[in-house]
Length: 120
Image (tube, rainbow, N blue to C red; front, side):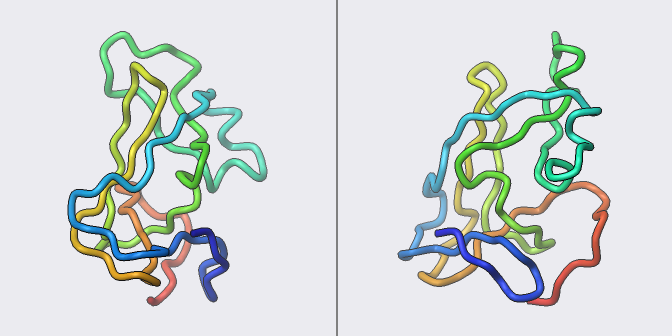
C-alpha cells in the first residue's frame, strides 16, 4: 500500500504479512533515455535499464517503473529485491525475508545515493 512516510516522502508498506520469496509485484516499465530520466519529476524515480545486456537498445538505458515500482524507498538492509525482465519490459519485486503487516518495503538501490538516507 502506498503511504507518506515521515522523513522519506512516498513509500510502500505491507497491507498483510508477506512470506519470504513471495512475489509482491510484477509491473511494466517504460524504457527511456538518460536525458529524459534526468528531467525534473523523473530523476528520483527512474531505474538503470539494459546497459549490462547484450543487444541493449541505445537511448533506452533507463526505465520508469509503473505500478508501485518507483515508490520503494532505499535501505542497505532491504527486505525486497528487484528483478529486471528485459524481454517483457517488466520488473518484479520479491520478499527477501518474511515481512510483517505494516512494515515498509525497501529495496537496495545498488548505486551511490544522491540523497541523505533517512533513519528508520
